[in-house]
Amino acid sequence: MDVGTNQGPVPVERAADVVGALELLVHTWDVARAVGGDETLDREAVIRTHASLRPHYAALQATGSFRPQDTPPADADPQTAFLYFTGRRP
Image (cartoon, rainbow, N blue to C red; front, side):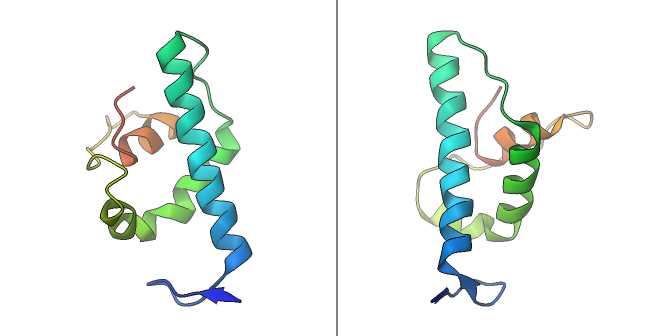
């Protein structure tokens, strides 16, 4: 089964994997931030998830789950760029 996207059909398993990774990464960071814990996310997971989600920014915004992205600093590491993409401010 495929899910329709602006990039064409995507297998539902792939879509679930990307959305699951987004949820896991973002909420792990949220909880760590809230309790003063280690906010460092898995670098490869961040890079992979961010790359997979970039083409779907408008759809993510349509959910109302994220604040609008802001431009990260020019020297931003992958995690910082990803967090800015999701509307978070590290």
